[in-house]
Amino acid sequence: MSDRLVSAVLLEILIERRIRIFQRVDLRIGTLAVSQILGAGHHRPLPTTTTSSSWKQTLFTMSDAEYKEAFALFDKKGTGTISRESLGDLLRALGQNPTQAEVADLANSSPKDIDYSSFLNILNRPNGFKPAGTPEEFIRGFQVFDKDGNGFIGAGELRYVLTSLGEKLSDDEMDELLKGVQVHPDGNIHYESFVRQILSQ
Image (cartoon, rainbow, N blue to C red):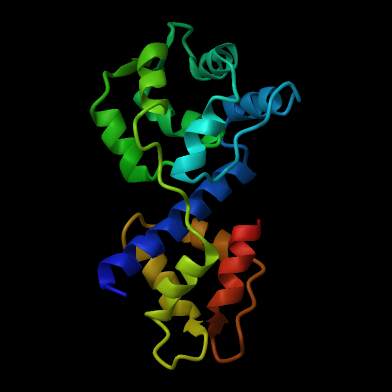
């Protein structure tokens, strides 16, 4: 496995964890409202991870009115637009899985304020957003750092990787990530258990 692929896999872990942290604190008040709309039972909610083949199919299970309602919840000023800064939160509230880099690219290529039509163009872009990845992909990424081949990685090394490479976690996010993770007396973490625990949250 190339170093670039390993970095990509670790970035996906980071992104998935950040999304889960945001979901745990319900992103913002707007996300709480979107969650209530999506949970109303009059349609199938979007899954938190999708494959490119199921993404479009799932996307169309919501009506245009439901998208407009979700969009309106993030339209803080009532101008019919959302700020570029709100784009990632709205996409994630609707069950999409954009990376921070994808959101930044979309925001940079969008006007300062994004209207509903532009938002629909983003949702309907040809390839959608990358799926979060499978546990096996994340585990293969950690195997690169498993010098002894015993299924363990040092907690300090894990902290360094996730706070220093790619889309970095903050120390607070890293502390949240490690809550409830079993660190063995020698300071190592069984990374397969770690990955499965995080993805099951």
